[in-house]
Length: 148
Picture (cartoon, rainbow, N blue to C red):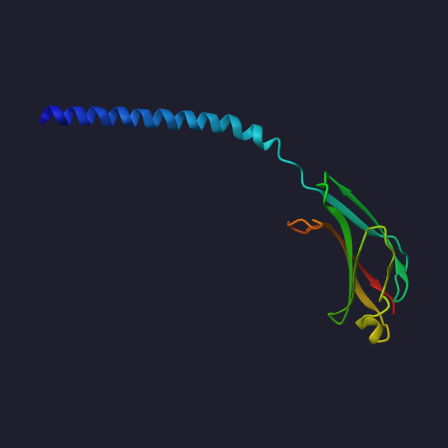
């Protein structure tokens, strides 16, 4: 019986040594591979947006200068969303390409229904995934007041 216990204990020691050797080898592989993989991660796109129009006003067009840096996937594209509110209530919103002219208030909106007036607006530059699944990515925003 004592001989059997010695054999089992000796076997467990060898098993523990093998386990430690494998764990050490795996740790070395990960410590070498992780920095190499980290350097290959694609940079996320960044962007800027700035209002071009000197005096934004209700029923007048506004335009923006935008830039997107970083590589977009073939199906991704930038869009600008302009939202205007009066007293915290959304009265106008329009989504279009960055080079579009946005007619503040549009042809039919709550802003038009209210007969105009000044509003607080935000233009936001996003990346859209097109028809593919994926997140809509916020890049930049700018705020401005629009005269009524």
